[in-house]
Length: 191
Image 1: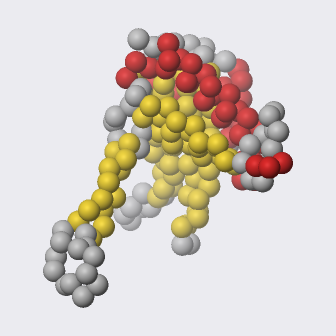
Image 2: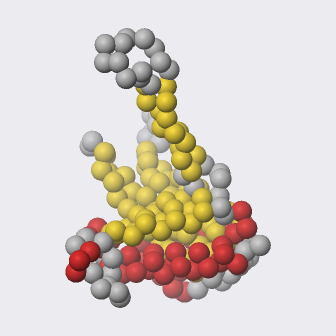
């Protein structure tokens, strides 16, 4: 059994989102490796009349970056009940081809080095998932009704975490910034 640091166990428990399931899936995915750094992010989304919860755990080991993502839902059928789906993804550090950290600062003229930024978006790509966005193509003639097919783009969509001081608090933003620095350094030294 992997000994996760007590602080990671505490972060998973504090997120309050099926901590036993999250810890079980994470321990299985770690496969005996020690955690060098981590980030836990829980989020609630609202769609029409539904409230959905999500949690992501990013864990960095000496050789891999793991992403555990848990969604809740409802089973279908006569005996519908709540359900949760947990997915564990793992990327070798040497296979990560991009780490992008977008920093947003509101009122940048008032920003000083050392201040907490307003928002951070961490995107890590390792070529597993891509998102395709298509729209009807046009020729530019507003009166043309011919079918011109579709145009669009494909974007890497492996891991994306967005936090803000307003929604998540300054501690969450500072923690993600620290984790991103650790990942960038680890990927830079992986070979």
